Image (cartoon, rainbow, N blue to C red; front, side, top):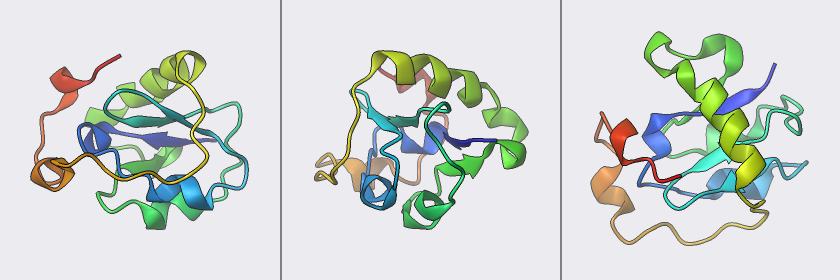
Length: 107
């Protein structure tokens, strides 16, 4: 099993989760993070750190977010590792409660 970053992260990209990851499995894209499923050790530490509740265990993914399992695996191969917390985008708070952001994902 792995943990998965879902749609809620898009345009928010808070990086609190990165600081607690013991294996550096997060990858950073232009406007969201993903988890490398080959690196994730299922420690659960990142889940509580995410202020927008954008991280789920693979087995607990909401049905409408299941495609993010494949999206995380795909983009983790293309995006660079992020190992230290960074400032969130200036407008992250404006996006944190919005839904239907999938079309805004920048690859």
